[in-house]
Length: 101
Image 1 (cartoon, rainbow, N blue to C red):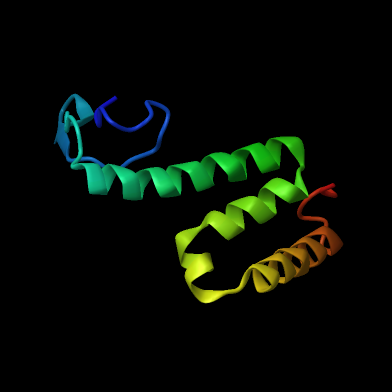
Image 2: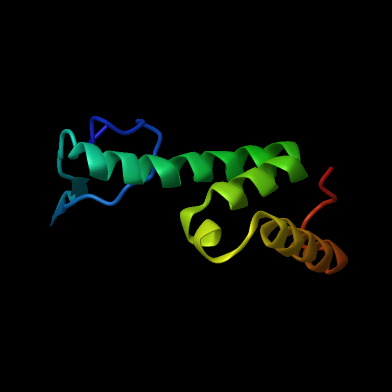
């Protein structure tokens, strides 16, 4: 990967070179430890969200929301669960997502 201390399958923003050959990401190497740790927090949440979508796991949705730093900073664990339940109900009712177990 272009950022060597993050997982290769992580989606990241890096400087790019744009020319007639298209867009090429520029090699970054290792991020400083604090930056890599902050990125890993979000990458792990994204991985949980993907696994939740693939497996239709309501439990993994709760875990992802509870581990998200922005959500966790604003809401209690009970409020996060309630928010997720409200979103499940609204989107399932509209036929936008399948039932999660």
